[in-house]
Amino acid sequence: MLWLRADEGLASAGRREAAALARRLGLADSRAADLALAVTEAAANLLRHADDGALALRIAAFGDQSAVELLALDSGPGIPDVGAVLRDGSSAAGTPGGGLGAIRRVADFFALHTLPGRGTCLYARFTAQPAGMAEPGSAAQLSGLTRPISGETQCGDTWAVREEPVAEGAAHLLVMMCDGLGHGPLAARAADEARTAFRTSRATEPAAILADIHAGLKGTRGAAVAVARVDPPARRVSLCGVGNIAAFVLGAQSRQALTSTPGIVGHNIGRPQTFSAALPPGDALVLHSDGLNSRWQPAQFPGLTGQTPAVIAAQLLWQAGTRRDDAGVVVVKAPR
Image (tube, rainbow, N blue to C red; front, side, top):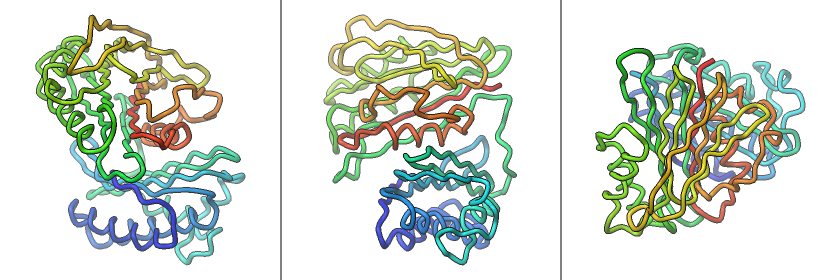
């Protein structure tokens, strides 16, 4: 994930980085031009209207497709009339591209979530083979974001996911959130080792996977790690964690915590426990590091659970992030 803070060079820097990602993905020239237009419009809106903001760009996989994702996040003042700003050709920032409506028109998937007086998150996706705007409704959706502490280029927070096929029904999802101790290269090394151990583990239960990660982190500075197993047909989630990874089942008006036990993975994990909870249709499992303030509440984010996981993760990271440490969040949204 590449983060670009809002300043006068944001649009040009964003277009340059977007062009590099488009080349890596093999986007056609016309789609690369659409991506450049979206970056320009998003940057113009951040500079004109936001108190503080950033663009984020990355390549992500969606089933058998890959896409460039664009996120624009800001702090205040929010959008009072979303319908008006999404009309194609309406550009409050005065650009020739047509504003947010133009981004929605050229993107393969578009989402917008705004909090009056606090800020807005824009999300746009550009695939190599345009697939339309529909999100899959029958399977769990997921996304995650990480951001390094200011002044660092490497992040000690990471997340990973893998599917576990079952005899009948939808595959289970195994999800890991890791916070390498401290920040910088040594924390990033611990996070990389945790991700490798998670992906190569043959275990299928969170506690056993965590034990494999614990073994893989020997010789590193260690980490806080939580592993969750999402069972979509049963609408249940189980989690085993050690250290300060926060885990919640997030509903429109509710937040149920799943507890981690004290310790440092790679050094001393004691006897980790596994906790389970219901994951009702449309609710989301949220795992995040202590780079986010864990005191956030659903009432602070009206309408957020109705959004795609990338927007949920981005708004939580931006609005609840402390910005004094690496930050990471991963979201799994249950199918309706």
